[in-house]
Amino acid sequence: MTPDPLLTIERFSVVYDVEPPVEAVRDVSLELARGEILGLAGESGCGKTTLAYGVQRLLKPPAVITSGSVVFHDADGDDVEVNALDEDQMRAFRWDKVSMVFQGAMNALNPVLAIGRQLDDVFTTHRPGMSKAERRDECGRLLDVVGVGRDRLRSYPHELSGGMRQRVMIAMAMALRPQLMIMDEPTTALDVLVQREILQQISALRHELGFSVIFITHDLPLLLEISDRIAVMKDGQIVEIGAAESLYRDPQHAYTKRLLGSFPSLTGERGDFVRGAEAPASATPEEDAS
Ligand SMILES: Nc1ncnc2c1ncn2[C@@H]1O[C@H](COP(=O)(O)OP(=O)(O)OP(=O)(O)O)[C@@H](O)[C@H]1O
Ligand SMILES: [Mg+2]
Image (cartoon, rainbow, N blue to C red; front, side, top):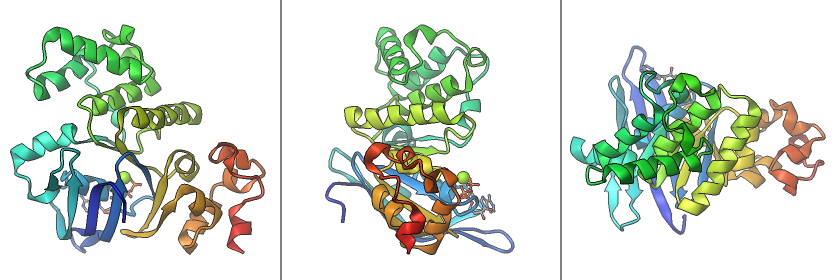
């Protein structure tokens, strides 16, 4: 049990009703704590995006939720059963409470609008009470926060690097101060250094702003570095979940061991790559597995 849970997923299953049917998420139970960064790892097709969409109720036919529940424990004290919300409640819930940075998000900006305008649109839509000056201040602040800088408010997407565009998408996802951000491989297309820098920034921000993150990627070394806990998914199920540190030192499931073993950077001498200096160079997964 998590002392201060933000999200409780219980026995959640999703089937794509095609021929033959695909059991994309099978009986997944998971609790996410307030302020926690949870990494979700697993090979392509194991159901990561389907699970994330389920949490935001973004699933569309042929996806069918065949069992389970997703309950969001709002900071204001309400417990919200996500799949019982009507469309209006759902619109408020997305962005406001839970926001998502989609797979391939950096290409999702509108090419003909300045990024400041696109950020501004989030506020005009969701915070109609804000004045123009308040919106401008807030947009500038957000661009500062993600390291783009407010002097870029008038820039167009094509004037920014991929990393900068990614940061803009993250700024948009953070705009309404959601309690949970789900990031679905938001950085795949970026080089590793940029990727790590952005994620370290997010990790620092969640302490400052107090939000939780579910971060989805194939990149286990990266997850080990930034996550509090890691859930490993295989064939629609969570086969192992634990503190990043212990999952690295003492993986229980054969699949986790295989996943760790498939990253040479984790098994070589450069143990310092993982979670700073905390991991001694000798603690390789092979030794732990013996
Ligand atoms: N619209 C759909 N119709 C039928 N099957 C689907 C549909 N979308 C996804 N699937 C199947 O559901 C399973 C889970 O897919 P999902 O996209 O959730 O995996 P993933 O872990 O996010 O993969 P990746 O790492 O490649 O993004 C896969 O077998 C996939 O082929
Ligand atoms: Mg996916």
